[in-house]
Length: 441
Image: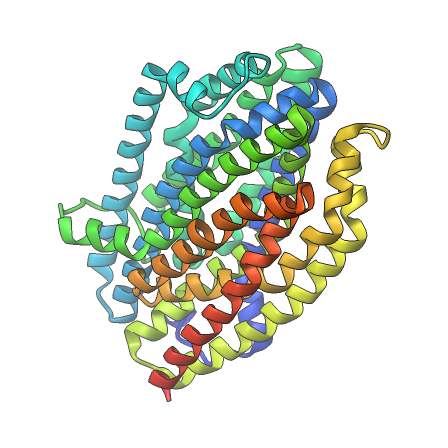
C-alpha cells in the first residue's frame, strides 16, 4: 500500500467510503452464512440446524485463532507502514500468513483424531450426534483454508484493496449458496452437503488471495519471511481480544445450547440457533466497519497524528450510534420474518424464537459501541486492554447472564442475557474510551 492511501485528512464520506467494501464484505458473509443454515433447516431438518450450532464452538475456535493473527498482525503491519518500514511489513505479513496455515493444519489433524470425543464433549444428544459428526468431519478438511482467508480478509484493506475482499466474499457466497443447492437438494448429501458448500466458500478467497499477494506489485506482498518470535507474540497479544471474543462465543453458544436443551429440548436449541445467526448477521455491520477503519487508526497511531486520530474516532462514533438505532429497529420489526425463513410459522421452534425477538433486539443498541472500542484498542496495539474488555463482556457478563437470568425468568431470561450484558458493557467501554480521549488531548 502506498502511504497516501491512509495518510489523508478523513471526513465522514471518505472514511465511510473507505470502510464500505469491508462492511459489505462482512454483511455478505453474514448473509450467506444465514442462507447456509436456512438450507439446512428447510431441506434437511431442524435437528440438523441444532447440530450445526452444537459444533459451532469448534468453528469459533478456528475463526478466533485466524482473527487473532489477522487483526493483531494488521495492527503491527499498518503501524510499520505508517512509520515507513515497508520491507519489514512485507516480511511480517508473509510470516503471519504461514503461521495461520500451520495452525489450521494442526487443528485439522487434531480434529480428525478426536472427532468423537469433541462431539460428545459439546453436548450432542444421541439424536443429534450423527448430524454433528458428519458436519464437523467434513468442515475440518477446509480449516487451513479458513485460517488463511481470514488473514487475507483483514489485510486486503491494509493493502489498499478493500474492494477485492468484497467481490471475493460475493463470489464465495454465491458459490456456497449454489453448492448448497447442488449438494443438499440435488445430490441429497444432507448436512455433509452444507459443510462442503461452506468449505468451498473458504477455499476460493484463500486460493485467490495467495495468488494475488504472490504477484501483486503493491507495497504489501509476499516476500522471503524472517523468523521473528516477537512479531508473532505481539500479533497474538494485540489480537487476543478477538480470540477472547471467539472463545467466549464458543462458551456462550455451549451455555445457550445447554440451557435451552434443559428448558425446551431440541426445539429450544433450534430456536436459540436462529437467534444467534440473526445476531451474527446484523452484527456484521459493526464488525465490518470496525475492520474497515482499523488500518486508518493504526496508521495514525504509528504516525503519532493525534489531531487526525480524534477526528477519525468522532466520525466512527457517529456512525456506530446511527447504526445502533437502525439495527435495533430492523431486529424489532423484522425479527419474525427472519425467524420464518428458518422454521414454519406453525412450528414450536418458530413460536419460541419469535417470542424472544422483542427482548433480544435491545442488545443492538449497545453492542456496536462495544465492538468498535475493542477493535480500536486492537488497532492501537493495546491488546491487553482490548482482551480485558472482550473477556469482561463475554466470559463474565454474557456467560453470567445465561447462567443466572433463566433461573429467574425462565426462557425469557435466555433472551434477556444478551441485552443485559451489552448494556452494562457499554458503560464500561465508554469509560475506557474517555480515558484514551484524554491522552489524545
